Image (cartoon, rainbow, N blue to C red; front, side, top):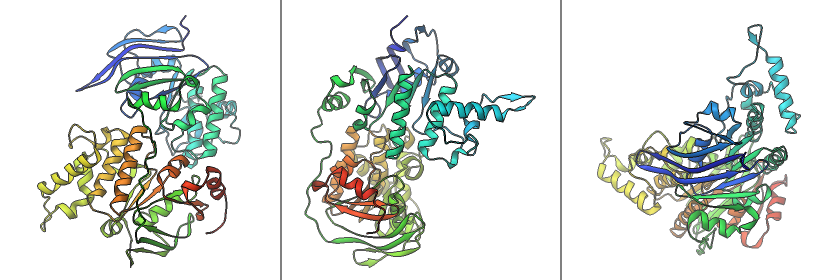
Length: 500
């Protein structure tokens, strides 16, 4: 029998016009957490979809617990062999209960009816094995936090006796407490002999749980080994093909005049008397724990959520903003936290995504689009942001996370906006693409644009911001200079239920 829980050798996969995987290998042992690392587009997801039977390989060998997979592997076969994936975008039926989700497609029946009591019993038992004793199986999944939904997904996988668990960006939308809980569960699964593939762009978290690493680049296998045998610089260099000397390139620009004033902003229960100023030539960061009210504050400024009271003043003029169209027209734009849901029309082309919010700039008086103006706008976005695309006609949903974020930014650069708000600008994108986004932020800063970033990653907030406002429970509880502060000081403000 093989020493590996999973062995993949000489795996190749070609899509029309693209060789996604070229002679790739992967080796995973039982009771091991392996980080599968690489930039967006490196082939990680394709390799895992082959392992789980979603895609079929063109060539190569796969063994799972010593069983050599002959022919095409489908999802049912992979599941029967003990392989399960927890996707970054959770596949949950929000209107169904916890137990109904866990048994979806495998419902238990008794006397011709659903055996809800037995499904609840088994769901409760499986959750308890993960140390989760306070979750009622009758709870509607849509009422749970993302972290709790993720725990349900893990319990569901273990209910079908999964012995190989693939976790794709599991911490990207979790609070610090939920991340700690997830790490606890990963360690518990490892101690039970589960083999875990952990895909993450948050490299700073790897040392908490990872035993080994496998690194891919541009569809090729690069290297593998014990995590402790690599420095972080070596991991990054192997991922991107060259050394990145500065993960957070901050440009120093003299602070100019006051551009934006927010006075006593109130919106719902999560935005409580928010006041702050922002200036030309600075990046203003917003930090705090998940649920502190940062996103809600930005949405209220942008007009995506209605405000109850307060003033928004731009260049000395009080604005009237009832909706995003009002904000965009007056020079305030937002790259939202969930770019796929709120920032892009993923089924539309890159061209349409960039053009749609700018029709007032590219249409004539009769409402007809000027192709000349549109093409100029598309070319400006493509060249200034180095968007990697075969054509502007491809769907935005086909792009990597980093390039999707660039498309979101490109549509706003066309407007010469005065205030650009980035909510979690680098969530789910690789280290090299992050640096590119930071350089875009620096470019805006040098051009006198006010840049506001919301980030849950403290190293990022401290590395790219010139000033940080910390929020807790809907209020600003502190202001710090990131060059003269510590993560501990920021966390103190982030847990301080006071007012500014």
